[in-house]
Image 1 (cartoon, rainbow, N blue to C red):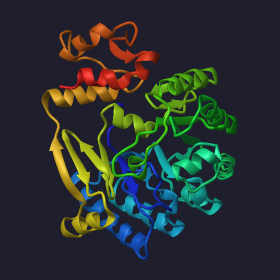
Image 2: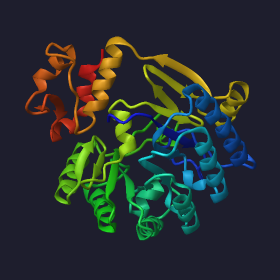
Image 3: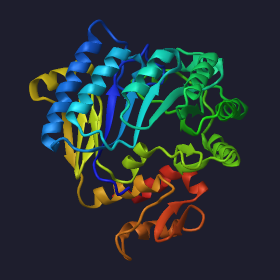
Image 4: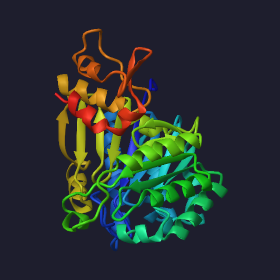
Amino acid sequence: MGERGISIYVHVPFCTRKCLYCSFPSAPMGKGDQEAYLEGLSKEMGSWSRQLRRPRVHTIYFGGGTPSKLSPGGWERLMGDLGQSFDLSGVREITFEANPESLGVDLLKCWTEVSPGPLRVSLGVQSFLDRELRRLGRVHTASDAVRASEMVLRAGIPLSVDLMFRLPGQSLRDFSYSLKMAVGLGVDHLSAYELTVEEGTPFGDMDLELPPDGYGFYRYLQWYLGRRGFVQYEVSNFARPGAFRVHNLRYWLGGDFLGLGPGAWSCIGEARYGNHPSLGGWLRLVEASGRGTCCGEILEGARRRAERAILALRTSFGWAPEGRDDPLACRLEPLMGDLVALQGGRYVLTPRGFRVANLIWEILLP
């Protein structure tokens, strides 16, 4: 990824209600929250713009939370403020996350009109089975997910769908059904994630009956999508040829990115910054200093090299060592053949390597 400029991630912290597994910074929108949030974003954009001298933007990603909870008027203001603070003339990709229950024709029309570059929609489906959606605490139904997917595709907008596996009571047949539904609808990109039960979430306090591990689901995912013409270009991401998501590759292959909004993270050069996770805390910091940053660190030495290697190995493009005697390459040597391969001077994970990637990361950590 040799393109100059930064990528921007904007966190929209609103949702209809928290899902049972969700640990992301998000909450239902209260009275006046949208206006306060947009005002805070405008100030934060201005602060970063002055420091970075109105940089050229490569890609933009709106995540959440649920970005589709903002009104069309809110989006017009947000995109106008982005254009004032940053150079959007060379944007290669702009992605909006959405949930099926809050996505409508008017919002799609608005996104199309305000987008400064090629538009993508990422739909948080998670499952096409109603019983699984209820177990997850999702607001939408399977029919809502089909309706929203068809709406996006009819508008001629490339669609990515998020699915989850290793859910409570889920069988491989259940997961296969959701995969087949997504592919059958005509998506060109699919992200699939194993359920992680985290402390502080409702699931974290429950005695859940989960499948023993996600290995079988993941192996089936690789097999099925490969047969349907999808390429695995990252641990959790699959796309039809030519449909890789450029924004995500910027994260994994070392590009600078700026995070705006509550809970967003930035990585610029060797510095990493984190914003306050709550709307109120973030707004107070923005009012006081112009941005919502509450923590930061400098990535140096062995830790920086290991993190860059791990992120690059998440992708099918792999990682290039720093010379013949790179100590990280030496750690990968015992895994060659079965889990790791060498292609054009770059180390890449094999399909089986992707299935046990967490174990490989542990080997590389300093």
